Image (tube, rainbow, N blue to C red; front, top):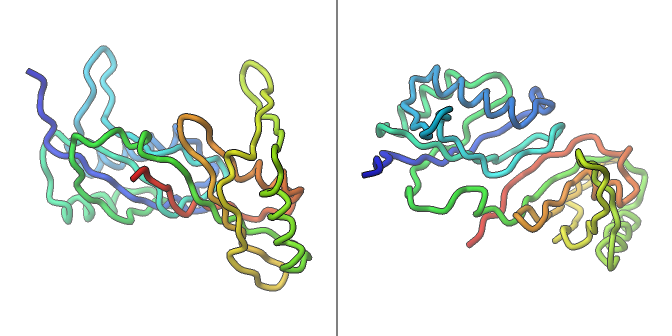
Amino acid sequence: MPLQTAQRLRIVFRKDAEIKYISHLDLMRCWERALRRADVNLAYSHGFNPRPKLVFASALPVGSTGRAEMVDITLDQRIDLRDFAFCLNAQLPFGLHLVSATEVPSALPSLPGQVVAAEYEVLLESKDSPDAMQSRLNRLLAAETVRRHRERPDGNRVYDLRPLIKKLWIVGRRAEMYAIGMRLQADAQGTGRPDEVMAALDMADAVRRIERVRLVMRE
């Protein structure tokens, strides 16, 4: 009989600018070490090389910050959520912050399979008027196709960015700084990248910060 897992927790966390250049693999290692130091009883996979059961919703692009990133962890012993938050906060490295921890049913689908899109806020410097900036966004949204190149180990791949862009909007403006919001597809069929959107807007050099503000989950 398979062992019944005791508890599945969904953690929402922030990844701040201090560690925005670490890779997704390094981020996973940070979480593993913090959870071990917090003396959390993690459940492990079976097999030759058991691994702790940590499942991240979506890898955050290197160089970006995240306001509401998510990871599911499975424990083999139940824990009070208040104790969990207290112990974990004391062990998280500089630049990682626990936002919330909730218990979710173990029978829920895998976390990455529930993500359908991601919303970003891009801070950029531009002398464009609000009307001119809106026109930029409108031209991209009106395009039938947006051909881009994506580097892969087996060579460059040409793909159409346009279907991956769901929404673009101006969040706000102060002096010559704009905040641009974008909702991009993020599922098994394709993942839009905010840096590619900014390049398609011919504003790659104007970007000052990229932050993923939330992940959009399947209903």
